[in-house]
Length: 277
Figure 1: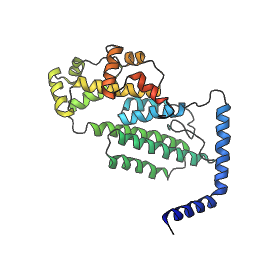
Figure 2: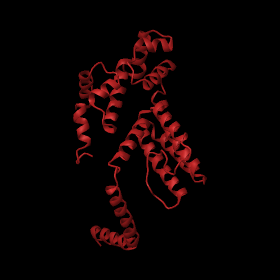
Figure 3: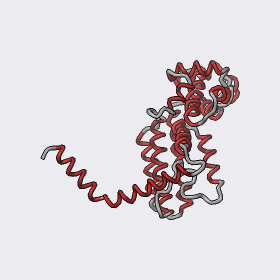
Figure 4: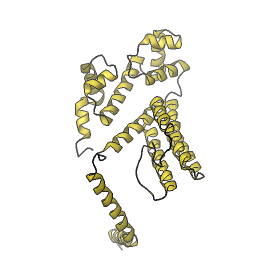
């Protein structure tokens, strides 16, 4: 039997074995697509946008914004099975299984984001496996939802700590401050006051440990954040420039074009192109 014939035979067997199941799944999908299309204020891609924003924070090691998200969800009186997991949907008739499935999806996506952010794979997968193995023991839906948020925090903090693992305390302190104040005009004197070192000392230390001067590090992180904002919000380019305290919109556009090879507006337009979506 040729390879093509064997593949066809196996595919035919697959189709036959799950024919009834697939009909039921297709019926469910069609019903829900119809309902979402005909419901005022339908999704219109907002789930994906929110998901991208959430997992950008993980990949960036942005502990402040992850902490804000987690704190907001913990403050919720009654966490639903999908509460703040970053992935929402009706995946099971059982609330317990739904919570577990969504936890798996959330941790899987967060693990990928952490690896994309530079976290070593063995660390990322160890964190993921640890949370998912413990999930098997739980029957309390609220605890499962809280575990999902804890996993997001653990992976985000791991990205940050791994990124700066070979840095001195001075550099780590400066980096942590920078990442928490990307909306501000961060000055070298502020970093000097924070660490009780001179601006020149900090600049030389950054060059030695990070391979770049603090001003470049600040600009790179701001541009990365700007890129995420272009993907996940409808803020005007000028508003993003102001939000991240660039000297001017033209300066922001020039820096962005130099780093990504496209202007901010061109980059945003690409995300709405059906071919690239």
